[in-house]
Image 1 (tube, helix red, strand yellow):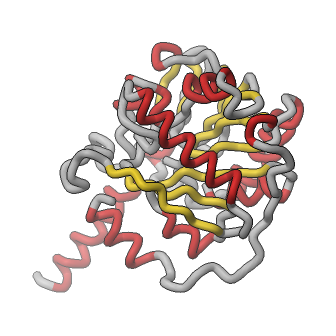
Image 2: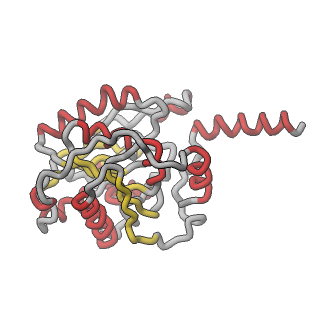
Image 3: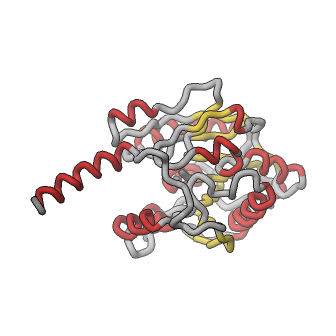
Length: 159
Length: 114
C-alpha cells in the first residue's frame, strides 16, 4: 500500500473489528452454476452514454456523482470513457480488465469456472461523502436490472 | 463499496469485494473480502497481463466459494512487482477535496507558525 494511504487509514479507521450485523447471502450453487454480474466504482461509461460529472465535483469538492452506468460485456478500452478524480485512470483506458474484468469473466464462463456472466456490467463513481442517493435511489435500480438478468452473485472492485 | 455490498447481500445477491484496503471492513462490516496488495486502478493486475489477471480472479472467486462467516477477510498471496512508493496510482492532479484540505492545512500551519 502506498505510504500516504496507509498513514491516512491509520488515522481514520478504528483499530477494533466491526461488531454490528453484516447482511449475508450464502452462495446457493457451485461457482460453475452461478450467474455473475461485474460492478466497479471506477467511473467507467460507454462512450455512447454521458460521462460521470467531474465538473460539478471540481466546483463542489465534497460532492460525488451518485448515478450509475451500464456497460455491455463486449466493451473494450476503445468503447469506454473513464472519469475519476481520485485514481490514475490511464491503465483502465489501456485495458478495461484491470478494473472491470469483462474478457476474463467471459473466459471463466467458457471454461465452466462460473455458470455465466450476465450481459450487463455496472459502474458507479467511488467518491461519495454522502452516499444517500447512491444507496437509496441508484442501487435499488441496479438490483432490479441485475435480477432481470438472473444474477446471483456480484464481483466488486472499488476505486 | 462495502455499503454497496451490504445492500446486495440484504437483497439476496452474494458478493465478493477485491480490494487493496480491507481495513475499511473494521468500519463498515463487509460481507466477503479478498484483500490484495495491488494499486488502486489496477486491482486485478497489470495492463494486458491476462494470465496474471486470471490467477487473481480465480483466487478471489475461491474466497467467495469458501467464506462461511460474514466479515471474513482473506489475504491473497500476490505481490505487485513495483515498490509501493514508486507505483503510480494517484491521479495526475490532486483531487478537489484534497486540494481544499491542503489549503486549510496550509492556512492552519501559517497561523500556528507565522
